[in-house]
Length: 110
Image (tube, rainbow, N blue to C red; front, side, top):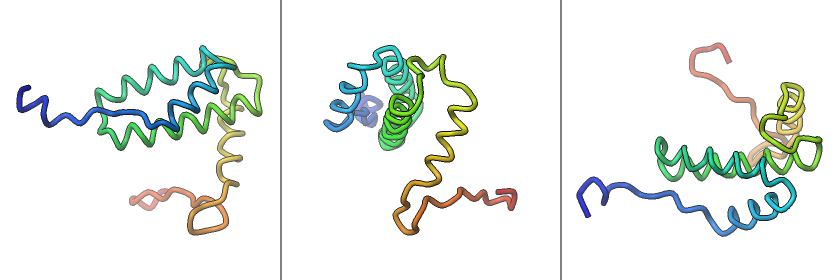
């Protein structure tokens, strides 16, 4: 093993991730396959913890899409689906407040 290979910390999906993707794939194989391929691509760019966050976020989006829309592939996702998801997401409980906080940018524009 080279020094460069030793520094690379591979992303390994958690057992929860594997279980949830398997459940989703049983109903919506193409949607989940596309999202998981994207996660594999992220491993070439991001640190493992960042890929974990993306994994959890995509699983949440996939669950919401499959539970509340007719979407069966990523190509089926429309602007209205994303807008509805954002409204749903904003209404979810936050860890320190009744709902999730709005993101704020450091430049005073957010």
